[in-house]
Image 1 (tube, rainbow, N blue to C red):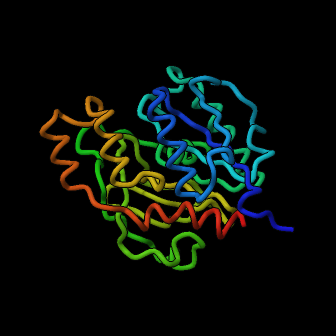
Image 2: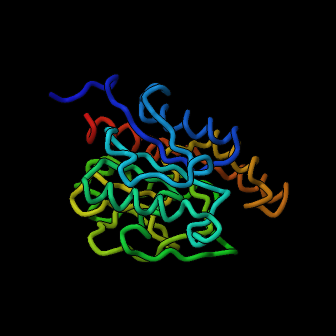
Image 3: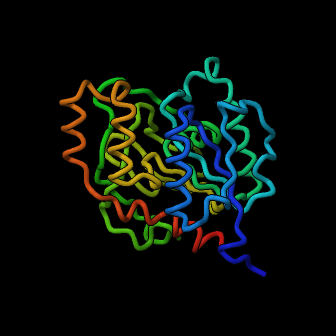
Length: 244
């Protein structure tokens, strides 16, 4: 018998070191999933860098968040990167429902055998128009999303191509932005479905020294920011159409 929404229990693989952003990210995931905070357990890799590939087995789904204090291309500096990849590869093999955002997207690409590149200048930052690919028309999450739609995207690492077995769903001129792995309930997004305009303002202000060239640049990005309702709706669709 299918579970009710109130019976669902999800695991959030979190890659955040600051207390403020940890809490904000958890609240954003819960809010846009339409779940209570108590329905999402957190495995934060800064607190627990080593963990079993079975960490998500007992949960209804695995969520993976973003990161601004880590780099997927530096596993020697961030040893949890390898453990995260093993967890995602195991989830894919077990057909565990997965919803991976930003850093989670990059981890998923690597876990499935793909390549992540780095861009130090002129990287995507702000709310961007994301273009859908034809396969999105039949996808459970994207089938009623307009083309293009706006989403929050702030990242220096990116993917130009996808691993074998991945279905491209959305992209910008610069990079891949969404894919599904085979016919399994495994989705990854380079943009941030869990972040809206309000949180973008808070997040970029918090990380302005990392992503902007100063207060004037920050203000320019924030002034151009748009609301992102169709991107934010993807999480609720994941729960409603995949988990329930």
